[in-house]
Length: 63
Image (cartoon, rainbow, N blue to C red; front, side):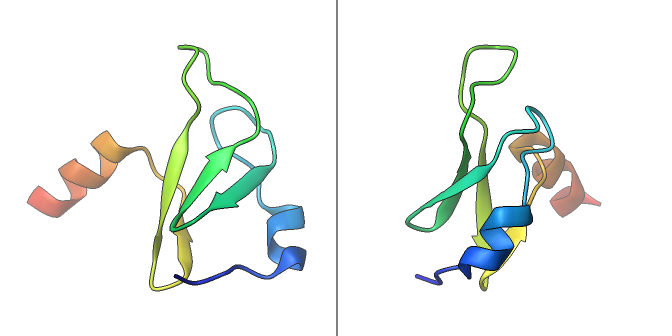
């Protein structure tokens, strides 16, 4: 599990809510819920934040 530096977490924001992102194991979670009431979650790929919604990632894998 890669831990992101505090300086990076200080500047990263959720693209959906604009809130800070909090590292929770191997994922980043928005500090605020999205418009649907759910907390957006983003993955880390080899320690690199992937700030795309899951449905967008699925479509990119098929291309």
